[in-house]
Length: 74
Image 1: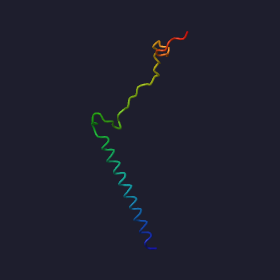
Image 2: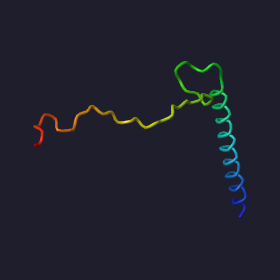
Image 3: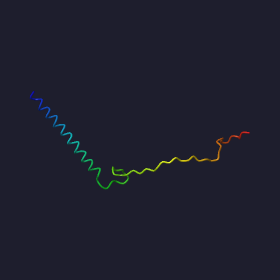
Image 4: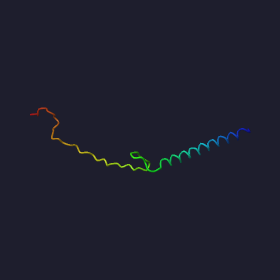
């Protein structure tokens, strides 16, 4: 039973090392994303996206009855 505590300690140390590495990578990536100025033509996390309101477009009428060259009915 002497090896079990050592194994638990090694697994705990490995997990702590992986968590510290993940936090470090996130800090580096956040620093990279927040640098100034942003390249032209590229979106950044701080960019605001503007949208235009969508309104229905009214159907246009041409005065055509839809017959398209057929003779009128009597």
